[in-house]
Image 1 (spheres, rainbow, N blue to C red):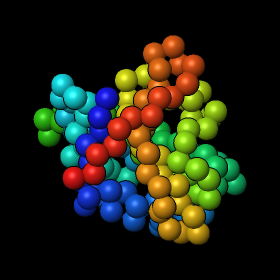
Image 2: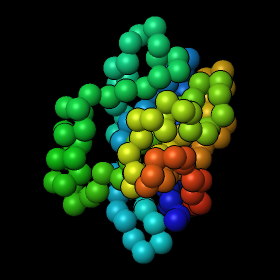
Image 3: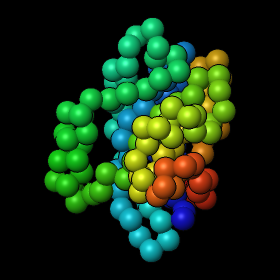
Length: 141
């Protein structure tokens, strides 16, 4: 499966996540599904509500955020495709925590942020049996 993302949106994601450093930051991915995968057309940052002392390696949002963004996506004719979040000073690969709390069929973009600078962005999809993530092809247009 392919994930398509414009350069401007990638730059926006990087700015959001560089500004949350040294903590994790994140938000929602909105767009459309097509025969080859997903096309991300917008991102919406959401405040990290995890316990403050754990935000350096954990990211969470509220169920109210989820409901609000599902409604917003629907009203705009878009689909809630998944989430983006950062891994401060750590590789852009899913952690065990990410796997435990991820949802199948959602696209996950993870950005490695080193010393307040985004250095890597990768796309992932959780397997249906929840055993692991598979890397997706990320196309920046």
